[in-house]
Image (cartoon, rainbow, N blue to C red; front, side, top):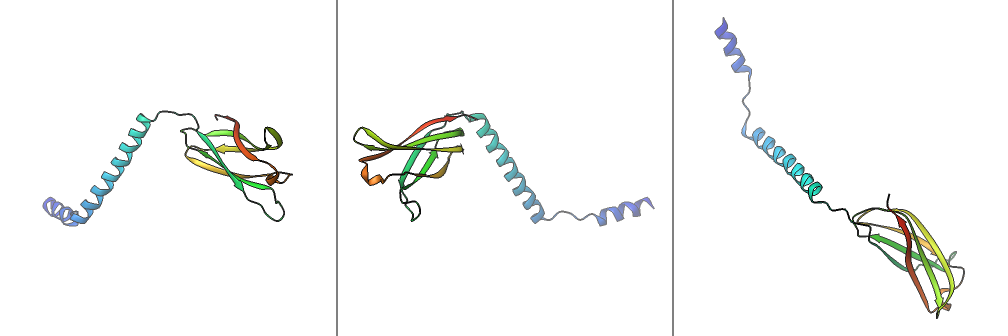
Length: 138
């Protein structure tokens, strides 16, 4: 009787076919590759400060004819928090008007956009310039 039980157990087990082993192997290789990559990135990561740059251009609308579109880009290795930037309209060395924009977060390798409105016509100025005034590390 014991022989028949062993024979039944052997008959009920399905041997794995080649496709099942292939799928298992591919899955295992992918999981190990992801763990290896994440481990390498964690080991070689060097913290860098935020590297912020500003781009701006006129973007008038009917309701806001003196509006500027502002793009802040962070190419550094860390998030910048409470970014304050300033757009200045100048006539020669005289400042005609200045406006500020504050952006809460600019994560690493990303960009954020905003708009600044002037109360005077930018065409009356010789130059419009922008600068990052301050930011914090979270």
